[in-house]
Image (cartoon, rainbow, N blue to C red; front, side, top):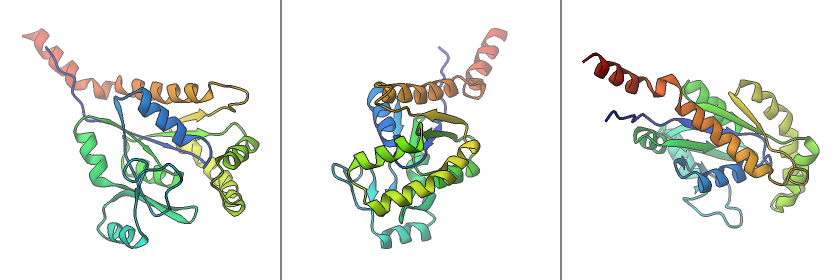
Length: 215
């Protein structure tokens, strides 16, 4: 029997704070166990319900500095007065084992990742409108007025980067589209499924099949 083992692919999901990236990625991991989540490091404090090592690796500023000095990050960036980074060791281990890996990071980190590695697939999650985005940020109940202003002020520049991504998912208003989360989640998974079927991921199989047919 011919095998179809391949190196895993890295899919980066990013977009403005409040666009729904975390909810989409969480639902994706729950409903599609064939996709694994890469856990990032951050210097920000955990939000209610977040677990160290599951949602993020929460580290001190000093520890983050040490990791930067060790060149341990695949990418890292300052975002909303905190720092976030993806460990190289985490990404390379999972991809080498053939796992498709999803990474939820900010737009700076996604652009860094795509610049370093042309095989990275960038998926931009967009809110349907500025008004809806502000509603989502306020519904969180975890943001100060200053934090909301900072995040909204950054939206224009973040949306401008969407033109450099491979795919754009519009996460609709739940009040208008009740199953908006399910729709957005399945759209992301459709991208992953389609990338698995590309020629590059089937080349070894086709080579082996062709050789067997000539025998």
